[in-house]
Image (cartoon, rainbow, N blue to C red; front, side, top):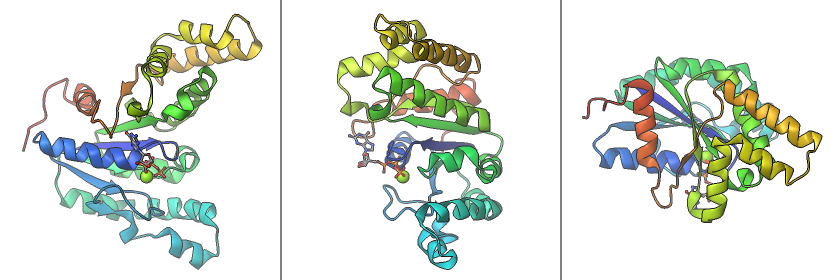
Length: 254
Ligand SMILES: Nc1nc2c(ncn2[C@@H]2O[C@H](COP(=O)(O)OP(=O)(O)OP(=O)(O)O)[C@@H](O)[C@H]2O)c(=O)[nH]1
Ligand SMILES: [Mg+2]
């Protein structure tokens, strides 16, 4: 069983992609189930096969502990870690080759709290992959690109599981913007140039040094451009997961 966790900043397109990717997998003869890990989700973009809201609902936690939505998410994250064994059991009972997890958008909760690490260790099993979505609205400037990669590196540092970088919603980007972002991911000199725009500022030097350190750590590599709207990149996600766990061979189709 391969567990793919779709994570990323709020609104990056995680839930939509979980639904679209499950459909793509089904159409191509692979077996994937979906798990909602967001206790605050009101409407989901997919039919979750396993849903954390069976155990925890954000609204109820707010009421019970007299908390606002953010405080309740913190409590929910800790409670979810306690339920991890039950969630894993429900997932394992369904026996699927792939499990697609929709991670809540409060990335700081996911990245910083030890409960998220415990949850992922329990659910991830022996074949976890972190599919990290990058929002085109956040990475489309050199400065935004650097800050987004810092956040991604924090996540990589926390979990240290194989990570895929997905440039999300590429249907919304024009060709030039898309080309820039994909080039920055692979060529830090190009990014450095675009950051500096002729000026060697301390901030630009700092940013490039950071990116070099991040890429040595393996937390920055080429991005896979994807779009739930057009279906672009879905096959590439699948191929990359295969590269990680099956040496490029297809896992057995069902
Ligand atoms: N054009 C376009 N819109 C998209 C795509 N994927 C998602 N969206 C839209 O982006 C918005 C956010 O999508 P979600 O899938 O809910 O994002 P999310 O990351 O799950 O959001 P949170 O769970 O709230 O953090 C919705 O309006 C989606 O319809 C895409 O590939 N292309
Ligand atoms: Mg969502």
